[in-house]
Amino acid sequence: MSLSEQQLYAISATERVCSAISLTGTAIIVISFLGSSAFRKPINRLVFYASWGNLMTNIATVISQSGIHMGLNSPLCQFQAFLIQWLAPRSRETKW
Image (cartoon, rainbow, N blue to C red):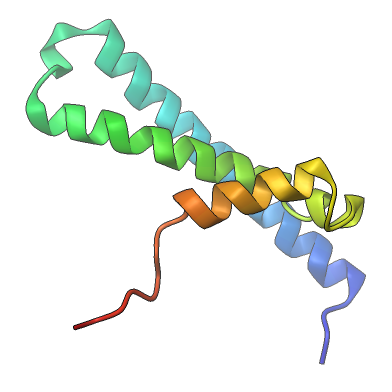
């Protein structure tokens, strides 16, 4: 059973809203780290660097279905695929 257009739109809208909230949080992290020397501790540096990957992943999720609608060989779709493939957290890693 495939999803209706209305269901796809609801998923896309939810994805974009959540990504916008995450982008706001990432901006706060970056501004805090760069703006105050009190945040320049090793653990905060780790969070600062991790936030850049989060930023790029959120850009991919903000694109949502727009890349697919432009065509699978379109530059937007290819860019989104690159961001998701390289920066999205791995949900299923091989366990040795």
